[in-house]
Length: 100
Image (cartoon, rainbow, N blue to C red; front, side, top):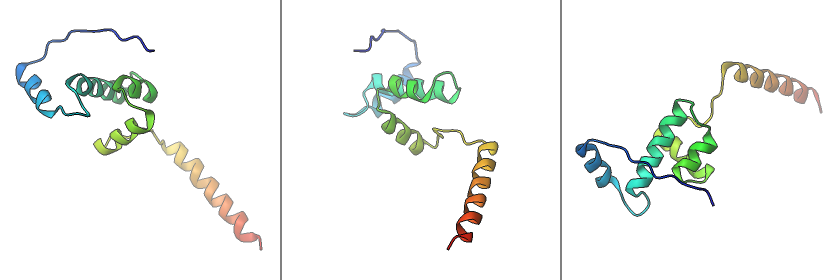
């Protein structure tokens, strides 16, 4: 089993009250903070997607779904990758249409 370390942080009471008001059976106070920390670190590219999912206490699919719902891209798709894919599709289509 993964070893966890307990860490203390200080947050303003107003923020703590807001987080407490958002807790439910699925998202405890601890989990909300872990998800927020994981997502922040992932967005800043400090940790990988798998590490963020682990920190958030979610399976990879669950975490990528969570990110999608929040409007955070789980994967980067660069212009270069798009160009390669478009070329592949164009080449494939030209080859496929020539066959009968």
